[in-house]
Image (cartoon, rainbow, N blue to C red; front, side):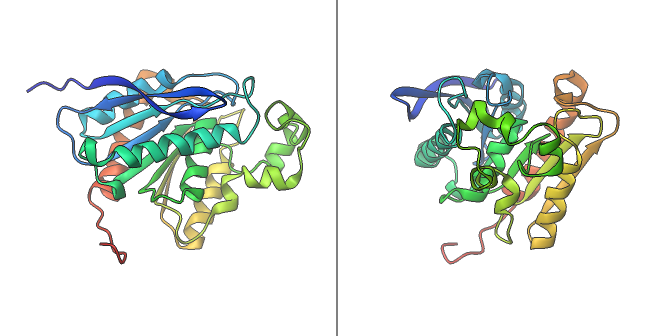
Length: 258
């Protein structure tokens, strides 16, 4: 039996007067669950093909993935990026039935800036998010770590002239922690010079204290973007699959609509 994961490009919305595209990874043996993949790059670089390895790995495990794009800071200021991610997730929900997916079993995953966007989507989407995954993501743009790296003035490239605490708080995933936050997997390395690994620790502790479910993996001695190394990419894919199997594939709805 073939394990080929088919890939096709789709238009998922409009942003700033142009088409927003996404790559759909269709598994040979779909399990009815989906994952929105969001690339990173500090909001200034990267593209939707960055996470192709995860799209293929998840596809071989039965997950249908949609790797979206979003407008970067050089094209549009915040909140364009999160608006475009919402548009992609809205599309994924709208197409779930035609893709043989359960709309209640759509998760989101992202790396670095994409991890931030993943968690923001999980915390703010009016549509159900089954689970969220974030690799080495910034959690709080008002934290001591963020300020030591120049926040808020270092955020002008993304925010423009309005770098108020209110805007920084609104784009910080930690702001949206609560008991209804989706089950979350966090992965980071304790030698990350870009985003302090303790940001992920703080997010995990906050989610657990709020009554949500969170799992944290801190890799000893690893830096930012550690999963670019093939062995850690494979390990990360395995951890993602195990988490999704437990919290999305095997989960059952318990709400009024179940």
